[in-house]
Image (cartoon, rainbow, N blue to C red):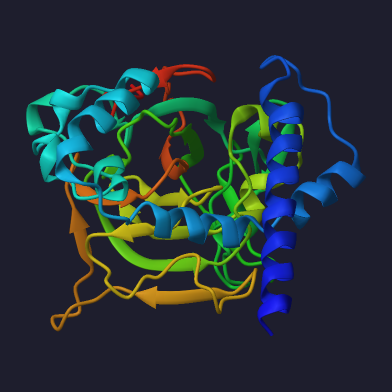
Length: 340
């Protein structure tokens, strides 16, 4: 039995090492401007790497207690390498017992002021991967030239209509139609390693339900999204759906390689990247307290955090004349304005 376990361990370590080397060569070492697709064979090889297991292992390793004497120099070195500021954290470096706590740290309130300008504010620090108006066909851009279906991404029910695009009409797979005076917009934000990894409410809105969609944990680096189709739709995500003053509002934290956990401050039952979950499983929760009210969030309010890098996708109805004022490649800090 011991020999079998050792062999399994060697196979796992070998596949992770080989997969990591191939990933670096194919996605990181290549020019960031390269948008050539990789072959189906390469895609299958990448998907075969046990990324969910790897991410759970990373999450466990990040919880290992670090001796207090080395915390400040260790965290300081990380900040220097990634460009974040150690002094922005709400607590002293020595108070973060492990790397997981430090990585998902909150910041001092004055560090990310919430702008009064803009129709909404950025929910997190990050780079705009794609943004714009949802296409008539009900698709949004993963990156330029690659799209994915909004109904599949939100895991919308068959009888759940969604207002779509410039024609202001959404249909469900059952043919139901919902007229809307607004258009549907999207913003896809990628959080880099040195970014602030908490996410906040972009607007005043009411959260009504969430869907936890189990899935893969492929990398969400823009260089990966340019080379592989449907990555965002394939990854594990937490779909938060509600309403705001203009209609539908959805906020979707998406998991990625190394993300051991997505935490919501208001939902202790959420457990992401579970060992016993299968890819594609969907768990629905509806939010209502004893007075049958849903959860109200205010603009800039803290909502949750990632334990490692990932993405946040916003999908929302807004007036047809909305100008997002941002474009792919722009970098935003949490609380900065979007739209006018």
